[in-house]
Length: 72
Length: 274
Image (cartoon, rainbow over all chains, first blue to last red):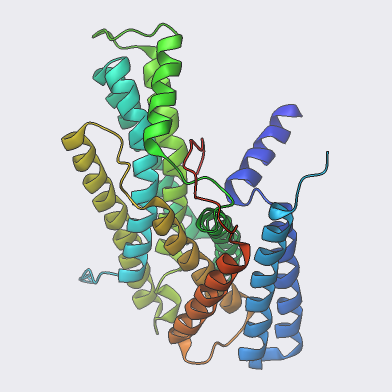
Protein backbone atom coordinates (compact mmCIF):
# COMPACT_ATOMS: atom_id res chain seq x y z
CA UNK A 1 0.00 0.00 0.00
CA UNK A 2 2.83 2.34 0.89
CA UNK A 3 4.51 1.58 -2.43
CA UNK A 4 1.33 2.44 -4.35
CA UNK A 5 1.05 5.69 -2.38
CA UNK A 6 4.64 6.63 -3.16
CA UNK A 7 4.15 5.85 -6.88
CA UNK A 8 0.99 8.00 -7.01
CA UNK A 9 2.83 10.79 -5.18
CA UNK A 10 5.80 10.56 -7.56
CA UNK A 11 3.47 10.74 -10.61
CA UNK A 12 1.62 13.71 -9.07
CA UNK A 13 4.89 15.53 -8.35
CA UNK A 14 6.21 14.78 -11.82
CA UNK A 15 3.19 16.14 -13.67
CA UNK A 16 1.85 18.88 -11.38
CA UNK A 17 3.19 19.08 -7.84
CA UNK A 18 0.66 21.79 -6.99
CA UNK A 19 -2.86 21.14 -5.63
CA UNK A 20 -4.24 24.49 -6.84
CA UNK A 21 -3.09 23.94 -10.42
CA UNK A 22 -4.43 20.37 -10.33
CA UNK A 23 -7.91 21.24 -9.04
CA UNK A 24 -8.15 24.54 -10.94
CA UNK A 25 -7.25 23.08 -14.33
CA UNK A 26 -9.41 19.97 -13.84
CA UNK A 27 -12.38 22.05 -12.67
CA UNK A 28 -12.20 24.38 -15.67
CA UNK A 29 -11.82 21.49 -18.11
CA UNK A 30 -14.98 19.93 -16.62
CA UNK A 31 -16.86 23.26 -16.81
CA UNK A 32 -15.81 23.84 -20.43
CA UNK A 33 -16.62 20.20 -21.26
CA UNK A 34 -20.16 20.68 -19.93
CA UNK A 35 -20.42 24.00 -21.77
CA UNK A 36 -19.26 22.43 -25.04
CA UNK A 37 -21.68 19.53 -24.54
CA UNK A 38 -24.59 21.93 -23.92
CA UNK A 39 -23.70 23.94 -27.02
CA UNK A 40 -23.47 20.73 -29.12
CA UNK A 41 -21.13 21.15 -32.08
CA UNK A 42 -21.10 24.93 -31.98
CA UNK A 43 -18.79 25.41 -28.98
CA UNK A 44 -16.38 28.01 -30.25
CA UNK A 45 -14.45 31.00 -29.02
CA UNK A 46 -16.66 31.56 -25.95
CA UNK A 47 -15.87 28.15 -24.47
CA UNK A 48 -12.24 28.63 -25.45
CA UNK A 49 -12.07 31.95 -23.61
CA UNK A 50 -13.54 30.34 -20.47
CA UNK A 51 -10.81 27.68 -20.68
CA UNK A 52 -8.01 30.25 -21.11
CA UNK A 53 -9.36 32.35 -18.21
CA UNK A 54 -9.50 29.21 -16.07
CA UNK A 55 -5.87 28.38 -16.84
CA UNK A 56 -4.77 31.93 -15.99
CA UNK A 57 -6.82 31.91 -12.78
CA UNK A 58 -5.25 28.62 -11.69
CA UNK A 59 -1.75 30.03 -12.29
CA UNK A 60 -2.61 33.27 -10.50
CA UNK A 61 -4.04 31.49 -7.45
CA UNK A 62 -1.07 29.16 -7.24
CA UNK A 63 1.39 32.08 -7.45
CA UNK A 64 -0.63 34.00 -4.85
CA UNK A 65 -0.44 31.08 -2.42
CA UNK A 66 3.29 30.64 -3.14
CA UNK A 67 4.09 34.28 -2.40
CA UNK A 68 2.13 34.52 0.84
CA UNK A 69 4.22 34.32 4.02
CA UNK A 70 4.08 30.79 5.40
CA UNK A 71 2.18 30.35 8.70
CA UNK A 72 4.24 28.77 11.48
CA UNK B 1 2.67 0.47 -51.23
CA UNK B 2 2.73 3.97 -49.77
CA UNK B 3 5.84 6.10 -49.98
CA UNK B 4 6.15 8.19 -46.82
CA UNK B 5 7.98 11.47 -47.22
CA UNK B 6 9.27 13.11 -44.08
CA UNK B 7 8.00 16.65 -43.66
CA UNK B 8 9.32 18.19 -40.45
CA UNK B 9 6.84 19.39 -37.83
CA UNK B 10 8.65 22.50 -36.66
CA UNK B 11 6.46 23.05 -33.61
CA UNK B 12 7.01 19.54 -32.23
CA UNK B 13 10.71 19.73 -33.13
CA UNK B 14 11.38 23.12 -31.56
CA UNK B 15 9.36 22.43 -28.38
CA UNK B 16 11.24 19.19 -27.95
CA UNK B 17 14.59 20.88 -28.69
CA UNK B 18 14.12 23.68 -26.13
CA UNK B 19 12.80 21.43 -23.36
CA UNK B 20 15.52 18.88 -24.01
CA UNK B 21 18.26 21.53 -23.91
CA UNK B 22 17.21 22.58 -20.39
CA UNK B 23 17.00 19.03 -19.09
CA UNK B 24 20.25 17.92 -20.78
CA UNK B 25 22.12 20.82 -19.13
CA UNK B 26 20.83 19.70 -15.72
CA UNK B 27 21.68 16.04 -16.33
CA UNK B 28 25.10 16.92 -17.76
CA UNK B 29 26.06 18.65 -14.51
CA UNK B 30 25.67 15.40 -12.54
CA UNK B 31 27.28 13.25 -15.28
CA UNK B 32 30.29 15.62 -15.21
CA UNK B 33 30.59 15.46 -11.43
CA UNK B 34 30.51 11.64 -11.45
CA UNK B 35 32.97 11.51 -14.37
CA UNK B 36 35.50 13.83 -12.81
CA UNK B 37 35.10 12.65 -9.22
CA UNK B 38 34.66 8.85 -9.63
CA UNK B 39 35.48 7.92 -13.23
CA UNK B 40 34.20 8.42 -16.77
CA UNK B 41 33.41 4.75 -17.38
CA UNK B 42 30.85 4.64 -14.56
CA UNK B 43 29.43 8.02 -15.45
CA UNK B 44 29.00 7.29 -19.16
CA UNK B 45 27.68 3.78 -18.52
CA UNK B 46 24.96 5.19 -16.23
CA UNK B 47 24.08 7.87 -18.78
CA UNK B 48 23.98 5.35 -21.66
CA UNK B 49 21.74 2.95 -19.70
CA UNK B 50 19.35 5.81 -18.89
CA UNK B 51 19.32 6.95 -22.54
CA UNK B 52 18.45 3.37 -23.57
CA UNK B 53 15.64 3.20 -21.00
CA UNK B 54 14.24 6.52 -22.25
CA UNK B 55 14.34 5.37 -25.89
CA UNK B 56 12.35 2.25 -24.90
CA UNK B 57 9.82 4.40 -22.97
CA UNK B 58 9.29 6.69 -25.99
CA UNK B 59 9.01 3.75 -28.40
CA UNK B 60 6.64 1.66 -26.23
CA UNK B 61 4.36 4.47 -25.05
CA UNK B 62 4.46 6.33 -28.36
CA UNK B 63 3.42 3.32 -30.41
CA UNK B 64 0.93 1.82 -27.92
CA UNK B 65 -0.84 5.14 -27.29
CA UNK B 66 -1.34 5.70 -31.03
CA UNK B 67 -2.62 2.15 -31.52
CA UNK B 68 -5.02 1.83 -28.60
CA UNK B 69 -6.31 5.31 -27.68
CA UNK B 70 -8.67 7.26 -30.00
CA UNK B 71 -7.16 10.58 -31.07
CA UNK B 72 -9.96 12.73 -29.53
CA UNK B 73 -9.43 11.10 -26.13
CA UNK B 74 -5.66 11.30 -26.54
CA UNK B 75 -5.87 15.02 -27.32
CA UNK B 76 -8.03 15.72 -24.27
CA UNK B 77 -5.76 13.79 -21.90
CA UNK B 78 -2.60 15.20 -23.47
CA UNK B 79 -4.11 18.70 -23.35
CA UNK B 80 -4.99 18.52 -19.65
CA UNK B 81 -1.60 17.08 -18.69
CA UNK B 82 0.28 19.56 -20.92
CA UNK B 83 -1.52 22.52 -19.33
CA UNK B 84 -0.61 21.29 -15.82
CA UNK B 85 2.95 20.47 -16.84
CA UNK B 86 3.33 23.81 -18.63
CA UNK B 87 1.94 25.77 -15.67
CA UNK B 88 4.44 24.01 -13.39
CA UNK B 89 7.36 25.20 -15.57
CA UNK B 90 5.82 28.64 -16.10
CA UNK B 91 5.24 29.17 -12.37
CA UNK B 92 8.87 28.39 -11.54
CA UNK B 93 10.12 30.67 -14.32
CA UNK B 94 7.87 33.57 -13.21
CA UNK B 95 8.94 33.20 -9.57
CA UNK B 96 12.59 33.28 -10.67
CA UNK B 97 12.11 36.29 -12.97
CA UNK B 98 10.44 38.22 -10.17
CA UNK B 99 13.24 37.43 -7.71
CA UNK B 100 11.04 35.32 -5.43
CA UNK B 101 12.94 32.10 -6.17
CA UNK B 102 16.67 31.63 -6.66
CA UNK B 103 17.91 31.12 -10.21
CA UNK B 104 19.12 27.64 -11.07
CA UNK B 105 22.90 27.70 -10.65
CA UNK B 106 24.67 24.76 -12.34
CA UNK B 107 28.08 25.76 -10.93
CA UNK B 108 26.79 25.70 -7.36
CA UNK B 109 25.03 22.35 -7.92
CA UNK B 110 28.26 20.99 -9.43
CA UNK B 111 30.32 22.07 -6.40
CA UNK B 112 27.71 20.73 -3.98
CA UNK B 113 27.51 17.30 -5.67
CA UNK B 114 31.29 17.06 -5.90
CA UNK B 115 31.65 17.84 -2.19
CA UNK B 116 28.99 15.21 -1.38
CA UNK B 117 30.79 12.53 -3.42
CA UNK B 118 34.13 13.38 -1.81
CA UNK B 119 32.52 13.26 1.62
CA UNK B 120 31.40 9.69 0.81
CA UNK B 121 35.05 8.86 0.20
CA UNK B 122 34.58 8.20 -3.54
CA UNK B 123 37.97 8.09 -5.25
CA UNK B 124 38.83 8.38 -8.92
CA UNK B 125 39.66 4.83 -10.02
CA UNK B 126 39.24 3.05 -13.37
CA UNK B 127 36.91 0.33 -12.04
CA UNK B 128 33.18 0.49 -12.73
CA UNK B 129 31.70 1.98 -9.58
CA UNK B 130 28.08 0.98 -8.85
CA UNK B 131 27.33 4.20 -6.96
CA UNK B 132 28.69 6.27 -9.84
CA UNK B 133 26.65 4.34 -12.43
CA UNK B 134 23.46 4.67 -10.34
CA UNK B 135 23.99 8.40 -9.68
CA UNK B 136 24.55 9.12 -13.37
CA UNK B 137 21.67 6.81 -14.43
CA UNK B 138 19.23 8.42 -11.99
CA UNK B 139 20.00 11.99 -13.00
CA UNK B 140 19.77 11.29 -16.75
CA UNK B 141 16.59 9.20 -16.34
CA UNK B 142 14.82 11.73 -14.10
CA UNK B 143 15.67 14.74 -16.28
CA UNK B 144 15.06 12.70 -19.42
CA UNK B 145 11.57 11.60 -18.38
CA UNK B 146 10.32 15.16 -18.79
CA UNK B 147 11.86 15.22 -22.27
CA UNK B 148 10.30 11.81 -23.08
CA UNK B 149 6.90 13.11 -21.99
CA UNK B 150 7.20 16.21 -24.20
CA UNK B 151 8.47 14.16 -27.17
CA UNK B 152 5.55 11.71 -26.86
CA UNK B 153 2.83 14.33 -26.35
CA UNK B 154 3.98 16.71 -29.07
CA UNK B 155 4.68 13.75 -31.32
CA UNK B 156 1.24 12.21 -30.89
CA UNK B 157 -1.06 15.20 -30.59
CA UNK B 158 0.70 17.15 -33.35
CA UNK B 159 -0.63 17.55 -36.88
CA UNK B 160 -2.36 14.18 -37.14
CA UNK B 161 -6.00 15.11 -36.52
CA UNK B 162 -5.85 18.07 -38.90
CA UNK B 163 -5.27 15.72 -41.82
CA UNK B 164 -8.20 14.86 -44.11
CA UNK B 165 -7.70 11.07 -44.40
CA UNK B 166 -6.66 8.43 -41.88
CA UNK B 167 -3.52 7.61 -43.89
CA UNK B 168 -2.56 11.29 -44.05
CA UNK B 169 -3.21 11.54 -40.30
CA UNK B 170 -0.91 8.59 -39.62
CA UNK B 171 1.82 10.12 -41.80
CA UNK B 172 1.43 13.50 -40.09
CA UNK B 173 1.60 11.87 -36.68
CA UNK B 174 4.72 9.91 -37.64
CA UNK B 175 6.28 13.15 -38.92
CA UNK B 176 5.49 14.92 -35.63
CA UNK B 177 6.97 12.11 -33.55
CA UNK B 178 10.12 11.91 -35.69
CA UNK B 179 10.49 15.72 -35.55
CA UNK B 180 10.16 15.68 -31.76
CA UNK B 181 12.76 12.91 -31.47
CA UNK B 182 15.12 14.78 -33.83
CA UNK B 183 14.69 17.95 -31.74
CA UNK B 184 15.62 16.07 -28.56
CA UNK B 185 18.59 14.33 -30.20
CA UNK B 186 19.90 17.63 -31.61
CA UNK B 187 19.62 19.33 -28.21
CA UNK B 188 21.40 16.38 -26.61
CA UNK B 189 24.19 16.45 -29.18
CA UNK B 190 24.62 20.21 -28.75
CA UNK B 191 24.70 20.15 -24.95
CA UNK B 192 26.95 17.05 -24.77
CA UNK B 193 29.41 18.56 -27.30
CA UNK B 194 29.54 21.83 -25.36
CA UNK B 195 30.02 19.90 -22.10
CA UNK B 196 32.80 17.77 -23.62
CA UNK B 197 34.56 20.90 -24.87
CA UNK B 198 34.48 22.91 -21.65
CA UNK B 199 34.45 19.97 -19.19
CA UNK B 200 32.59 22.19 -16.74
CA UNK B 201 28.93 22.84 -15.96
CA UNK B 202 27.20 24.92 -18.61
CA UNK B 203 26.47 27.89 -16.35
CA UNK B 204 25.81 30.37 -19.16
CA UNK B 205 22.83 28.63 -20.71
CA UNK B 206 19.78 30.85 -20.06
CA UNK B 207 17.87 28.06 -18.35
CA UNK B 208 15.11 30.24 -16.95
CA UNK B 209 14.39 31.83 -20.34
CA UNK B 210 14.22 28.39 -21.98
CA UNK B 211 11.98 27.13 -19.20
CA UNK B 212 9.72 30.17 -19.62
CA UNK B 213 9.43 29.66 -23.40
CA UNK B 214 8.71 25.93 -23.02
CA UNK B 215 6.19 26.66 -20.24
CA UNK B 216 4.32 29.07 -22.54
CA UNK B 217 4.41 26.56 -25.44
CA UNK B 218 3.19 23.63 -23.33
CA UNK B 219 0.38 25.67 -21.74
CA UNK B 220 -0.74 27.11 -25.10
CA UNK B 221 -0.70 23.80 -26.98
CA UNK B 222 -2.32 22.07 -24.00
CA UNK B 223 -5.15 24.62 -24.03
CA UNK B 224 -5.59 24.23 -27.80
CA UNK B 225 -5.52 20.43 -27.90
CA UNK B 226 -7.48 20.04 -24.66
CA UNK B 227 -10.13 22.41 -26.04
CA UNK B 228 -10.35 20.39 -29.26
CA UNK B 229 -10.65 17.22 -27.21
CA UNK B 230 -13.62 18.79 -25.39
CA UNK B 231 -15.29 19.60 -28.70
CA UNK B 232 -14.37 23.27 -29.08
CA UNK B 233 -14.23 24.38 -32.71
CA UNK B 234 -11.51 26.99 -32.45
CA UNK B 235 -11.93 29.82 -34.97
CA UNK B 236 -8.98 30.15 -37.40
CA UNK B 237 -8.13 26.48 -36.75
CA UNK B 238 -4.52 26.09 -35.54
CA UNK B 239 -3.76 29.78 -36.20
CA UNK B 240 -5.68 30.49 -32.97
CA UNK B 241 -2.50 29.32 -31.21
CA UNK B 242 -0.89 32.71 -31.90
CA UNK B 243 -3.45 34.76 -29.91
CA UNK B 244 -3.45 32.09 -27.16
CA UNK B 245 0.35 32.36 -26.89
CA UNK B 246 0.06 36.18 -26.90
CA UNK B 247 -2.50 36.13 -24.05
CA UNK B 248 -0.28 33.88 -21.90
CA UNK B 249 2.80 36.00 -22.69
CA UNK B 250 1.10 39.27 -21.71
CA UNK B 251 -0.30 37.67 -18.55
CA UNK B 252 3.17 36.42 -17.65
CA UNK B 253 4.82 39.82 -18.11
CA UNK B 254 2.13 41.53 -16.01
CA UNK B 255 2.49 38.82 -13.33
CA UNK B 256 6.27 39.28 -13.13
CA UNK B 257 5.81 43.03 -12.68
CA UNK B 258 3.25 42.46 -9.93
CA UNK B 259 5.37 39.88 -8.13
CA UNK B 260 8.71 41.67 -8.42
CA UNK B 261 10.31 42.29 -5.05
CA UNK B 262 11.57 45.89 -5.09
CA UNK B 263 15.32 46.23 -4.55
CA UNK B 264 15.87 42.51 -4.07
CA UNK B 265 18.65 41.11 -6.25
CA UNK B 266 18.03 37.75 -7.95
CA UNK B 267 20.26 35.62 -5.76
CA UNK B 268 21.61 32.50 -7.42
CA UNK B 269 21.92 29.46 -5.23
CA UNK B 270 21.59 25.75 -5.74
CA UNK B 271 18.15 24.44 -6.54
CA UNK B 272 18.14 20.65 -6.51
CA UNK B 273 15.33 19.99 -8.95
CA UNK B 274 13.95 21.81 -11.96
